Length: 348
Ligand code: MRU
Image 1 (cartoon, rainbow, N blue to C red):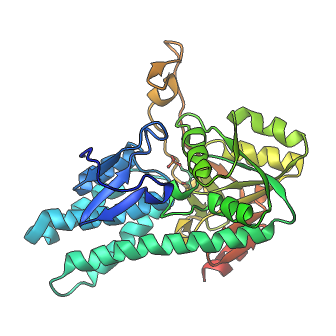
Image 2 (spheres, rainbow, N blue to C red):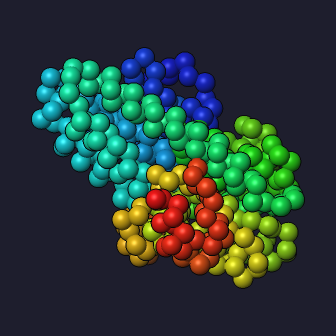
């Protein structure tokens, strides 16, 4: 992984950049205080970047992996046919929960399987760019659909970062927030800080402030108290995988937010493209939940904070049952009070 500084503007929409046949990622581990692009040149480097959180967020992981397949073929040259399956396996092993990763790799594999001719790199690059652009278009569509669900002006709580940085651009949950802001329907946005990676305080706050959308940070545990005041209308979040019955996997803490929302009569909107919906998985219990290293909790900002001797449980996603979700917003339409029947209707 090369830390070069290409002339790419540092904006949330430039988290994944293909430029002059090279792949650059805005390194999200150090935002907002450091704004470096890193260049990746192989499938292994892309897999490492996904695992190490250089790029994160379900759609962004899928798009990056698609470009990773292009790099794999470019690097292998004439040998690409004998190496590609292994490279795709390497990419697929990077993170387990976000289904967009496997969805994007399947799409690239489909192109490879049907390939006849000489321009494999050209064809795969084109597909990766289409995946990227489709995601941006889906986000704009979901932004409008989600905003239309909100009556009047509302205060919103979001969790993690489901914004431009986590997608091809514009964002899923934050796409709706952006649309609400544009339509003058956003009273105020509160963002959970999102321990331990602080996607809320580092990424969501940074990207919204770039767009001049005011944001207040909350410790994750403060959300229920905020809701009890009665001013919050909606919790709006993204997702890493949605099961066939509408159960939602998202950043750890989403479930407790949804439980608190139900108690306080606050509505819950999950915003995700159909590439996040896994119809092969019947319910949330079957979704693989990534458990990451203890160090992520024991240390904060490079400093040890956990008492020595303490053990750690660090699942980084949780499952919110469909019964706690008021609406799932996709680019194909909105599912109100999701269940298996409605999800199947959306996807068929
Ligand atoms: O661990 P992360 O930062 O990849 O987790 C990201 C999330 O949980 C997002 O909410 C989700 O991927 C949706 S992004 C549009």
